[in-house]
Image (tube, rainbow, N blue to C red):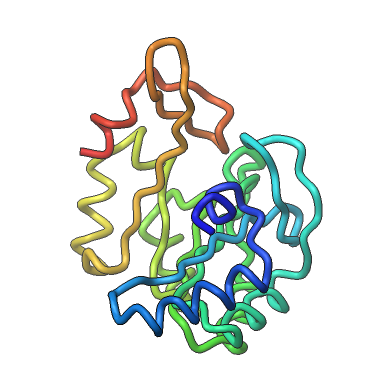
Length: 183
């Protein structure tokens, strides 16, 4: 099951099996699903390429909530490169439909952007490019909203130099070692 989760091809059956195992094992395990959003639709891709439509984000969020997911992460994967903000209308619609916590990421550049996303209903924000460009922004977000609301995402790819960090929706190599950046 872990392999399916990592490759992004989670099916409802995988989710239902994971939830059953979660309850039977008695161990603390959480099912957190990541939905990549492009042009207002959930997409699945391989290494930031070859995207295929996977459905309506509001409907999928509701379905995963109903099936027992513990949390959702919604990443607008083209917002940064398109220089646009997250879709607040979609965030509000999802907040009205689900009862589990969810995180939103994509083109967050300011504390004002964070505020809008949290006020629209997200419990957390996920930042990547802005955090790499200005690590102090992480601290600013934590001071304003608390550490429980800030998630730093890392787009890491294996290169001849090891695992390196990319920004701008996985299109720009930074030269930063991903392991060191995570630490």
